[in-house]
Image 1 (cartoon, protein in one colour):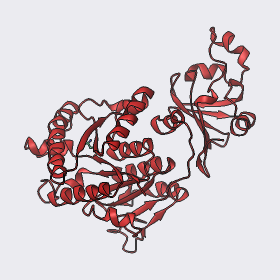
Image 2 (tube, protein in one colour; image 1 turned 90 degrees about the vertical axis):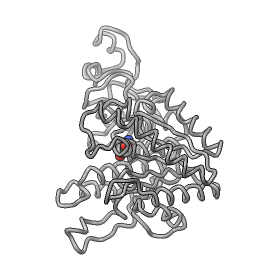
Image 3 (spheres, helix red, strand yellow; image 1 turned 120 degrees about the horizontal axis):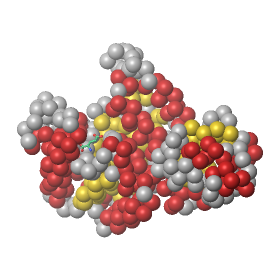
Image 4 (cartoon, helix red, strand yellow; image 1 turned 30 degrees about the horizontal axis):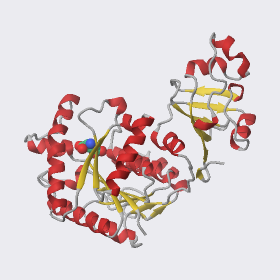
Length: 378
Ligand code: GLU
């Protein structure tokens, strides 16, 4: 059966630890594995870091630059080299590739999200393996994915991939840092409840998993599994293991996907393309109306608000116990909602001094989130 696979490889796996040069055997094995899988009928997307690392090597810089402009300039040097290297390797196996550079904005704006989605579909239809990276040269802080684990998870969610492989410099997760705790247990499988607990475990400074690297991987696993994508963290030195994992071998750490049933592309974008910028807390009546009655959110049902956001931003709707029950797009900004919360809709125009939408979140822009069963529409 044809599957969609998103494979992310980090700079640490692409470079040799000893001298910082490219790890050619790893790249060759990755390229061979992905080409084989593609020939067997799978749809493959590769998310590759390395632009800054390769750029530094090209310019003979011994240290990673700190200044933003320099980093962006070096990424521009490195990205071209990186794609050239991939093209050489993939071309020797007659496999066409494409370069896709994305910023966060490209998935936030609905029209560019749809465009990116259609372009990926067209590339996959053409039998191409797209190679994705963040568009480091133009991305600005607030519109950055920040790391390629998150980028890969967002792409996998958008494409409704079956698998996300995060290839990294550890072979799998352990219950603690195996270098410090000798009886640290390897973790083979994690379901979504355990994933939440693992995040707490990584908060401890006594484990190496508390580093940004592993935290972002767990975060990526959370994004992807909540979109129904099975996610694996495994060693980047042996890309051929991807095939073994697909055949059922227990290599790496595998995160079980949640079951999701989001039936419209617009609602998928709300959940997987957008980041919630704030929270609204709802009373019991609003919760029932939304969860069971298929209704929009009205100002009257809002008891609390958290965060500063604009109209048209995504927000989380939570019950009084702070459990997220839905995501949606706000019709009002946070200071407007502060003024109208708890009030009947007829009062909105006198409270704000202008007439706005009758609903705070319209049903068409609202997706239910079931903490026990993932994201699901009723
Ligand atoms: N986009 C960055 C690069 O290509 C890497 C980001 C990351 O490693 O997460 O150098």
